Every structure is written in structure tokens, then in C-alpha cells.
Length: 257
Image 1 (tube, rainbow, N blue to C red):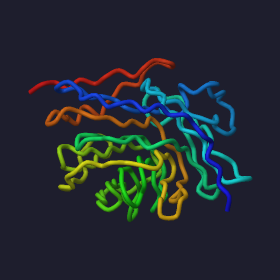
Image 2 (image 1 turned 120 degrees about the vertical axis):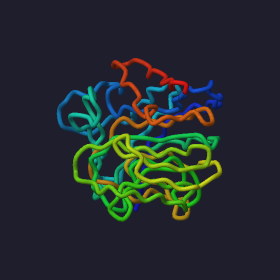
Image 3 (image 1 turned 45 degrees about the vertical axis):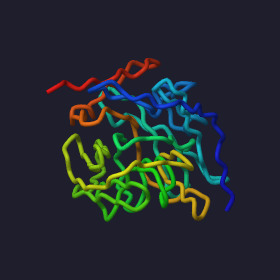
Image 4 (image 1 turned 90 degrees about the vertical axis):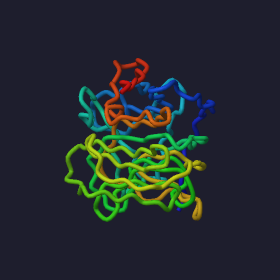
């Protein structure tokens, strides 16, 4: 099979250690709202690239099997005040992808909204699914997380086709899975999660076979990757604001205790 990955130019930005109690967003994909041209609301494929609203220009390009339809905009989105999301079709083997974000410390998080029920499929992945990085997936029919291709944190919530908010956080070596803002599972994983290969949405990159796999059916919305100061993560930090169209996401500052 021939696959084509639409090339996107991603800027490599050095990660700056956040101030105490501050959440630093290093990638934020609204899955439509800030894309150019703006989605019309009519059925049809998504744009060739979806914008990174964090201001770091980590655009994701459309990845699709030759002759098959690409991802589509779906309405409404999965978060409050979100107008549009990205919809995927596993039979078409389509996704969005860009260069993985490297250099993360042990204090990071990844989150998204989804209504997918595809067991064994990857929702969002930063890096190689078998060797590095981290991501969110559906494993054994439960919302779950993965780190460094081996530490799977299986949750206890079964997808039901409704929109849910998922987050995977590495808090100073403790890997935590949140579903709808509530801690669902945790494990002492330790270590950083160095990533290479691709940052992918709707699938994951397998470096052993050199292609994408684990495609999903369903929609994904409001994806964010962030870092935070050691010992300063609060569950309320997952409640990031949705900016006005074209605006830069605000920074969530945790309350000091």
C-alpha cells in the first residue's frame, strides 16, 4: 500500500521551564476553529492542515490512504463552545500527523475530547507507539494511556459513544489517567518520555513497520500538550479555557496551597 503524508513545516521551539504553579501549553489543536480557510459547516474533508493555536506553529498535515477520503470536520465539537471537531474513518486509514514534540521532562500532560469507541485504536500519540513518547488510546475497551511504548495505564471507563474528556499526566514520575476531569488510574512509571517520529491524531506511528496504524472511527477535539512546574499540578489545570477564534490560548495558573 502507498501512503502519503502531507508535509508540514514545524518550528522546533526550546521548552522553557514554567514558573512555579504555571501550566505551559506547548501544543494546542482546536481541530477546526482556527484552521484556514475556516470550516464552512457543510459536509466535506478537513483542510490539508489543522492549526496549532499555541502560537508555536506545530501544524498537523492530513494523512490518508491513496484514493481514500481524508478526515472530515464534524459538528458540533466535543468541548463547551467548540463548533467543530475532526472525524476519522478506520476503513479509510486516515489521520492527521506532524513531527513529534521532543525534550519533555517528567512533568507533562496530554489531553483531548473524543466520542470514539474503537477498541485497540490510538486517539492521540506523541512519538513512536512501540519505542517512545506517550499518548491516549482505547485498550481492552477502556480509555487508557501509554508511555514509552510499554507502560500501558489501563483505565476502568468503557467508551459509550458520547463525548468525554481524557488526559494523561506524568506528575514527577507518577503516570495519571483522568476521565472527565476525575482521576481514574495511576502507576509509578518514572522517567521522561522522549519522543521521535510523529505526533499523530486518529492513529499512531509504528517505527518498526514504518507506517501509521491503530486508526480510529469517531471524532477528536481540543487536543493539548503541556508542561508544568514540579509538584505544582492540580486537577483544575485540565480545565483549560477555549479562546475566541484566532486567539491564543490563555495560560492556566494553578492556585498555590
